Length: 367
Image (cartoon, rainbow, N blue to C red; front, side, top):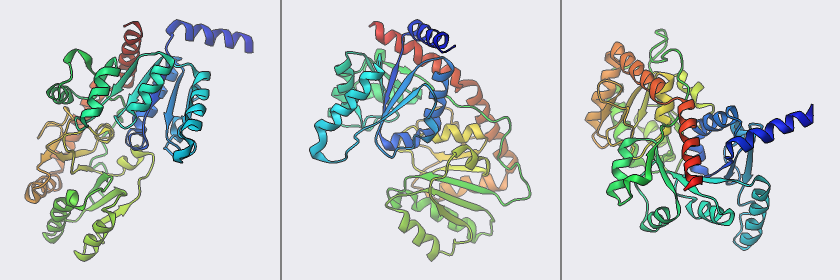
């Protein structure tokens, strides 16, 4: 029985001939945790053996599928152990024998390039932002066979930065949409809003907090949860206390799984995008939340008034008006939530994402 199973596995691997190695950093793993899980699940369903190289203490618990190998690097976080860490990494990867390196984000570009060069395999990169240095741009242009983006808006931004259009392909982030919308599904509870962030700068969240304070003063009853952590967390907590918002606003650490958290909320607020793509918006739409987001985003499915409501992140009055609309007109909020969820259901399937990636991997290996 064991010999038969081994033969079947060997035949499957020889037929598809693809063993992708995903390389990423802790922050990207944190932000893309549900997306990585869907991706690896899709590889598993297609009998594709895959592996990940991530820093220690990354959120890998949900990635532990039978055919997925997780390699933590660097094992020893000390400058003098660079060569020991590199030898350990190469020793682990020799057992995996990747046929392609897929780098997520730009933080680990040098590592991904060195692995691809060592094994003499092609490399592709997924980019969700057009904010990067000239050095990264030169390495990406020279060393990666393909640049993958999750939104057509990023294609325009990257070509403006000097990347060749022929080198860029759009691959939508795949997910599973819930059967029903959670937006205002429970009429007995107070409206609840969720803000998911890294809380880097208090100024990024100050206009939103001001809008929440004025809604509270005007008599609106609702709950807002700020979920995450970061340097500005103390200032956010101080603002909440000093303005009497303790009964309205709570700050909590990041909770998993995100989908379960989303299902307990009505509105997802995305206050500062800076033109980048955020996979959390895809997950929020898939759960059926009404989305209120920064107008300067890279999500093409966010259409103002039809699948979302957009505001100017630095304009407190703009944010106030958007949130007031979602609190006053619950039917409108439910309609934009349903529209966004239907868009995700039709354009962001896991099967389509996996199929596109495998085709790109195969083509890159032939080039």
